[in-house]
Image (tube, rainbow, N blue to C red; front, top):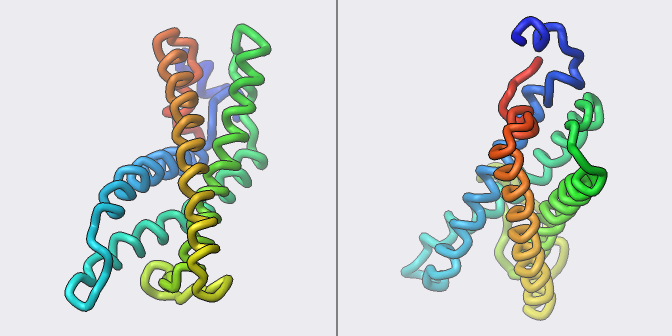
Length: 189
């Protein structure tokens, strides 16, 4: 078996090391963003006495913006070196996996962009990793801030639902031991 893996084509060997690392960076970051957002929203509003709220919000925005770049890199890597699709027993499973991945990519992008736009209309600036001041895409506007905040909220819930399907699929394949999950842990070159 080990000899077969060594001689396997890149498509048979699984995802590239870069794709696997980016996948897990995205997963951990998204988990962190969900967990931290509930905590952040419970913090008192900033005032001259309570300035500590700025750090978690900037960190949240920085990770979200970085996810857009990671997502773009993942798509580039996945399109550049496409592993063969796993041998799933039915065409509906392949379609569901494809729809799930497309929905994940679209929702991650939508969540990040709507969050950034909400921030742009909130009157609070965004400094990318505390070094680059990002432009405002608009003036301080409470109505647009609420509009984009609502989009951000609903796309977050949709992302959570699609992630649940994704994780359920991974658990299903892990219990079947059909090699699908192993592809995301095996680090080929």
